Image (cartoon, rainbow, N blue to C red; front, side, top):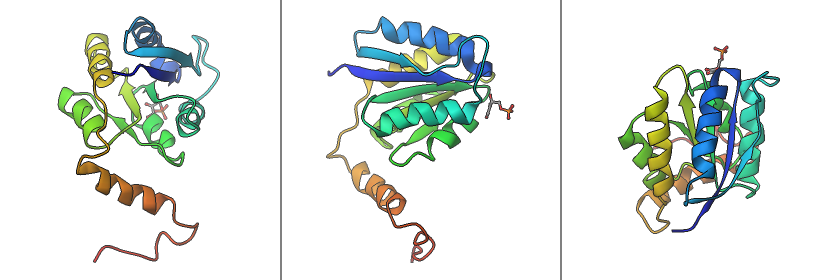
Length: 163
Ligand SMILES: O=C(CO)[C@H](O)COP(=O)(O)O
């Protein structure tokens, strides 16, 4: 299994988990590098700023996957999904973690430090690292619909609706 380049980021509300998860990832045999886009313990950026920085690394191909943490894992995922080509999900259970990769090819996982215990968060990230998306799976065609929609020219997204 190929080793992955990971980017991690959080706001101040997710800082403690981000640090712990980054340490786990740095010692994982499935990881080749971990880039931390902040924040540090003093904060200094809010969740959209961190999400954009991390997601842009993924979109640019500088990282294979990203782990984001805020209080709920919600806002930081919403922000990351605004970066073209990025699929970020909030997931706090093993089934969602599995589907996030195998069905949704999500490159970014967002967790809520206020939602789950640290032990579960660590285990979910560990599991998430073991899955790889199969480009030949039936999920690929559905994901292509999302990518096609995202890549329509500005102003054309409202032109076509499902029949
Ligand atoms: O959880 C967050 C965003 O979804 C973030 O950590 C805190 O955001 P806030 O509730 O808007 O302060």
